Amino acid sequence: MKAIATIAGLFLQVAAYGQQSASISFKNDYADVYHLSLIIYTPDGQNQTRVSNLNPGDTKAYSLPVGSEIYVADNKQEAFAMKGNDIKATGLKPRFVLAADERISLTSLALNTGGAKKKD
Image 1 (cartoon, rainbow, N blue to C red):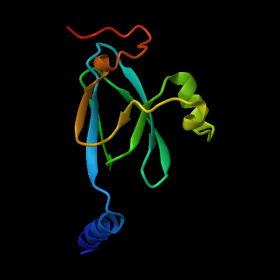
Image 2 (cartoon, rainbow, N blue to C red; image 1 turned 60 degrees about the vertical axis):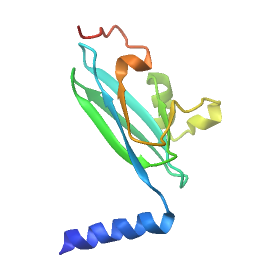
Image 3 (cartoon, one colour; image 1 turned 180 degrees about the horizontal axis):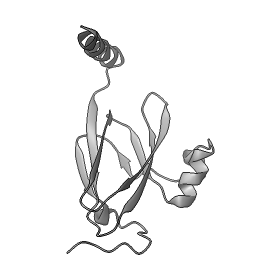
Image 4 (spheres, helix red, strand yellow; image 1 turned 90 degrees about the horizontal axis):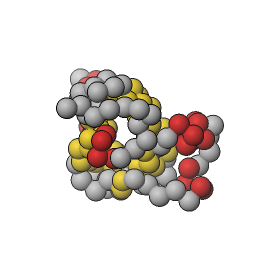
């Protein structure tokens, strides 16, 4: 019964705000562990930092409101955001503005990998 109430509450919240959600997933196609740091701004003005280490072959997925701005941060940007600073104030543009479901391989981002090698 509690689960039904929770689901109904989430449905009403989404309906009230008119926000649709989409998913974005990041797959580690490197042969090494990859440190993924995302700084996310949702359309309602909330921001969050999501940090995780992905083993080779792992996928990390997020469901976010359509229109969310996603920054793929390096170590310096991550430290800046973790101190409560607004990364938008630096003039950096988001890597993604979520419009629909997306699946991203880390090598396609051409990020500084710190020596990580692509899997064969």
